[in-house]
Length: 264
Image 1 (tube, helix red, strand yellow):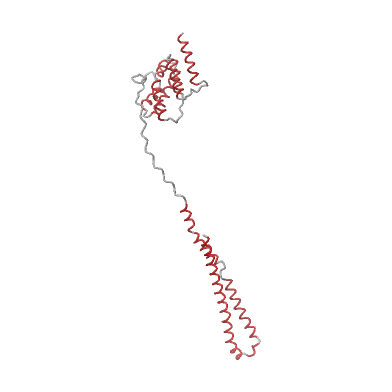
Image 2: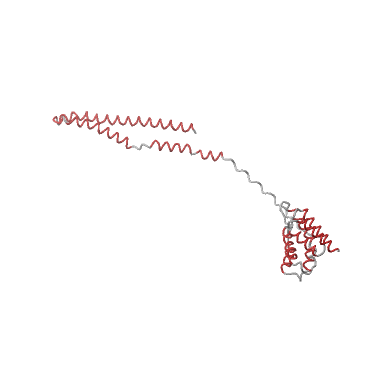
């Protein structure tokens, strides 16, 4: 880039030097021509009008002054910024390839990663709910019926787990009624299977212990103390919490007290 600028400055200097010489020659030619015309006109004027000898010097003096003034006016009338314009044009033309070079120097974009192969669909849970198989739900309210319908129609582990939480939640709210209490407690095996499969497919996703907590209450209220304790122990193995201060450890202690009280 520096070499190009130096070259341009040299070209501009040569151009200005030649132009100055040309203007000087033109001015000299303009000065010579009036003098030649005056020399040729002097004999004629002296023969025709001898008495005008005094006025002749004034004319001769005015002629060079006029020609000099005209030359100066011509020089000043010429656009002075012309060399700068040409220089700016040449510099701009020389600098034009610079963006292209910058573009060429830009790092090449990283190749797009190849799309990962489509993951195989998660295997569906084949186990059927033991409590729902051949069970008449005519006694159930619309909420429980809909939740069971969603569970049976679910095509993935996530959907089955979500539907089972809906079933257990409705049974937990209606546990004062024997039908809801027993139906919910009978879903313990199904829920543990679905939850275990969900943990395998989503190991990094934190799950809540709501289902284990509700099942433990349903099992405890229905007198299945050992199953309730075992369920709480599984919840602890999964690192779950029942949302209370004492957690599943405190729930196990309460279930054991209820078991001792029922045995008396």
